[in-house]
Length: 258
Image (tube, rainbow, N blue to C red; front, side, top):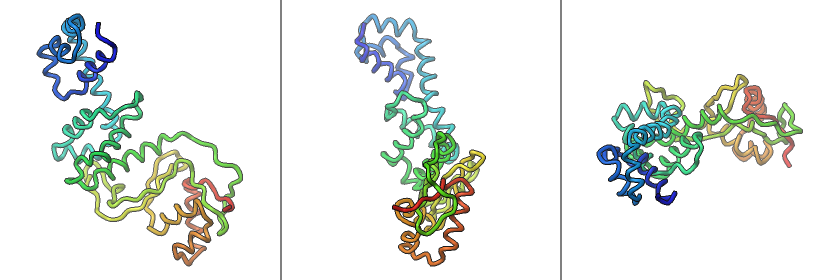
């Protein structure tokens, strides 16, 4: 019998190699080519139908979360005949190190970021995929207790405490305005607040550059300091915006800046 590691490598090749024809034509030869002894080669031959089904199911388990979590990215690339080459390149990269199903989609996004796949043709591709995954993660983020000592009404000496789900993100394209029917975003600087509303639904809210900067800065310094640094001359408007975001569920509350 083969060493467990050698057998694991052969089974990984069975799943991840792009062309399954080599195995289908000669299962025993496939096993031998991966260093397995004759007993294992004969087992590959005897159980070839089961191993072929295993290959199919394992590959589907890799593709399913990508197709589910990136529907607009898929629509874009399918329109160009590039979806299957993209997914195949990701599978061949063998970059899913986690045993957890939930980590496949983040691994796909990380692979896009690391390799730059397709971004010469679609410069917004990484941003589009990031925005799609962000909505899913915001929707599924576990509930967390709010920090103690927060108050609801902001004052200029306070700092902002965002809800544990909320994030401020910036893109070069309006990727939140796309759809499966129209997957190409407008090229314009875009600042978004990702949060979960009172009904538990993920939201991507357009922000002005100044509002986005304020939400970032005022998490670590007072609203007065952040507003002065950004040249925001109307504190009443600033405080009104923050109260609105608190009502929407994006801000957990406010506390005195230390």
